[in-house]
Length: 212
Image 1: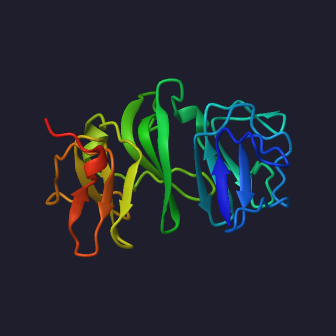
Image 2: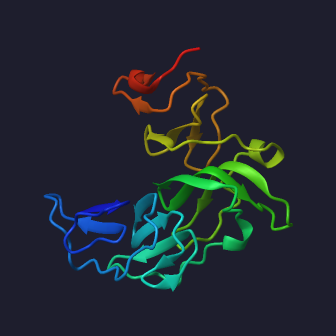
């Protein structure tokens, strides 16, 4: 199945920001989201028992919601999602991508977060959570605990089950499945897109790469 979010205006029945289809593009009418979102979502990621959705919306199916919510497989809101909203500054920060690494969810972007619950907000390029929204503080490279994290774009490439490439447009870094940066691997290619080739060579996408 395929899950879509955004300004979906031509679907029948009306999608209201999100819809699910089969592989042939037929709308799944068992995915019932009611009134949907008042503002189209920006990011969606399937997880084992539903979907995580982020955007500037303020309501879902007529109910007030936060900017990151979990939707169940049937299209209803998962009210058991225990995300630490009070520790995020969503007014100045943004989630640019959501990915799943093994049994963890990774939020990526310019994440302004109170890491230690002490009222001190810092920028982080990525943060790990479990599928219920519980924060995983041990999944973070020590570097980011003593420095303000660089802004990450939506670039995320899976190399294998243990290694992943991330980029903010001015560098490419490799992290493992516990969020630790590989100190040996480094690239400063200015690329907004990265792909992984079968011969283990990382090549910036020439269509969106700028050399200065």
